[in-house]
Image (cartoon, rainbow, N blue to C red; front, side):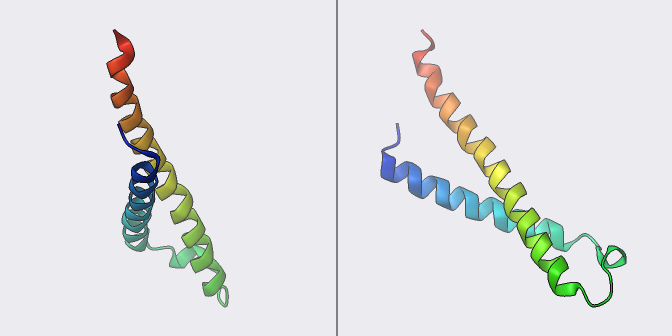
Length: 76
C-alpha cells in the first residue's frame, strides 16, 4: 500500500507524464484550418486546456485502476 506522501508524488508524476504525452499527441494534429487569423494565441491556450483535461483524465483512470488492483486483496 502507498502512504499518503507516496500517493501524492505518484499522482503528481502520473498527471504530468500523461499531460506531456497528450501535448505531444495534440501537436501532431493540424488545427490550422480551424483557427481564425489573428487568434493563434487563444487557440494555443485552448489546446493547452484541452490537453490538461484529457491528460489528467487519463492519469486519473490509471491511478484509480492501480488503486482498484490493490483493493482486490480485500475481495476474500
